[in-house]
Length: 323
Ligand code: HEC
Image (cartoon, rainbow, N blue to C red; front, side, top):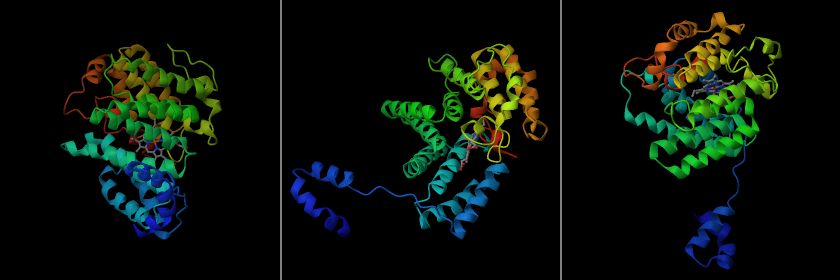
């Protein structure tokens, strides 16, 4: 407090005519937090634990891994990656809550924490539009939890920005974040269209056939670099391609079109890594049960951990990230 006073006193004396004026001035002139890459031993241990937890699908280890990351963050709170990864563990915990024996209402608090850390990460590194998309998604979720229309709208516009910055990644993110809406909600059809639009942009602007969903002609475009890399599998998301089509099929089943959904699901099998995907049996059951799943996905039955739309399932993150 003493530091703050001595920094601001001369200015404050000159410009403060009210408490509100003083507060806005002091806040507006506070220095921006600067990003500093943390290459300490503690940060490296926490980073390795983060990836082995996510890639191993070790949901039960989220708490212990969070302790390592938060210790690293407290020691050096300026690394955007550490901040983002704390946000990711919180959003993972709430997204895959179906893994818990009983889901406590307090699990929703993970959304607030995820938003807080994504916000920190984006302020430190505004260039990573992937994290911007996740921040927007947590704002939308928090807006819904609190029935806070202002926050929901803010999240919506943040998401528009994130989509413009990195469409290959954030068209998916936007649609996925909305996949839990009721099938007859005014935004649901747009969320499905976001998945088609992801495919179009991944096919370098060619329009994917909305009936056959045939992606085979574009498999030669696979890349590990640039923005288009997020259309494909990678070290970060070893089964992104398969998980993408699993979710898209689910969203189309929920929309009421199991015939097209079966075609969409089948595209997952084009992946070179398909045979190593831990959820390939789920995909086969999805194809077999597509007609009945229209009802299951529209009214998620309590107690069944598998027959619910991917975004609301026990593999909402690991469907793409588990090795
Ligand atoms: C449809 C597949 C898919 C789903 C579902 C998905 N992700 Fe991802 N995720 C990706 C892709 C693709 C990337 C970007 C990879 C890249 O940058 O090369 C990514 C990036 C990430 C990163 C990397 C951040 C970094 O430091 O580079 C993390 C962590 C992550 N996702 C966690 C999650 C969590 C937690 C969930 C669940 C809430 C989730 N993802 C859901 C596909 C997915």
